[in-house]
Length: 117
Image (cartoon, rainbow, N blue to C red; front, side):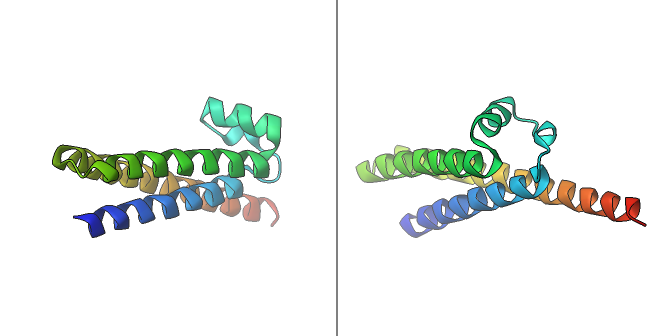
């Protein structure tokens, strides 16, 4: 079960990095209005898109990592099952976010290329 937990944690970290990349693709160069999350939009308006993404992703990945190792440390079977469920849910949510962001980016590129014709 430990290998599965580490694999899910690693994939969640990777999906968070992809979320940052795909968010940057959608918001660049200065399209904060495209961000649907009001907290993220506020952070990006204060720090700029790049630094806002870096800071928010580092904080989120740090939080995920702390929770992961705190629940893993005790090796309580119930805590491990909760951790497994949280990681699985987190992976599904961030996979959906990343897919949506890249689809939006693709539509924006397609629209912009038609406008240039």
